[in-house]
Image (tube, rainbow, N blue to C red):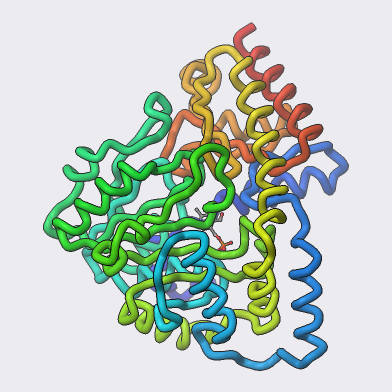
Length: 395
Ligand SMILES: Cc1ncc(COP(=O)(O)O)c(C=O)c1O
């Protein structure tokens, strides 16, 4: 039967390979295969108990109705306080929009700021959702590349050169998915200066803000009132509090932008889940020790992963400064029997039973992204399998 056409918009979008890889690994596990996953982008920890208790209590108290679309007033107040305390950002509650995850906050921001044909500068390798959401908003992603030799740090001149008359925004993500690279204060100042000079928006995705293993995270909006007036800061509970399934993200934006984002959200989803918002209030009130315990475990895993990957001949493995991914260059294994990082990732899953993400997904070909969200024991076993597989290729 001939099917009727879908909207042309659907042709723009590429499905998430992260989810596809997760599904393939799950199917192999269901067949009884011992698959070790280094593919997923979520902490393996449970949400801390006090957060769960707060949400259960909210259900018992009947917090089961619609809330204000942009979020519960008490949650917005907790976010304002969190931004002041942790990010050195001064904001009012009318600048806060709570959404169904940081991904949703990003979508609201792009839909509010980008008109058809507007260019958005993206620093590659990048989380592929940015590219897809920019296209959905009618925008054009303009990519500035970085590589392993510089630890995936962008070159300010390259960002400057990418700015055109159509540029509307620069999207930054520190710590980064997929590279774990961070933008230091000097780089943030450089980007801020460009933004001010050219009258651009900054969209700053800071979802991994608490997962840093060296210098602490800094928010670009904390550099001053001028830059804050051109910045949308996006973060949330998913990664810091192991709350990926709760779907609570939030944005802090100049009031007119926040209003536009809230209006868009109001017509699309209304509010994020009422009792999940109550859980988020508790999350933001917990002492940071809870987050630090998870961070410390991630740091041990990062060290283990970097050490074991660097023991594999030919890999280039920059040490990530944050998030929970290593982005390793695998170029020296490609070009012969293995044509691409995609093929390498597929064969690692089929033959070594380790799930990884091909770098191409993040506009970083000839790399693999490996998450250290599995236990240290599983990481040891998985990395041994990768080592064995790669060295068997060159035998
Ligand atoms: C860079 C980045 N931003 C945002 C998100 C999404 O966060 P949330 O689960 O809160 O939507 C992710 C998830 O993988 C991410 O890697």
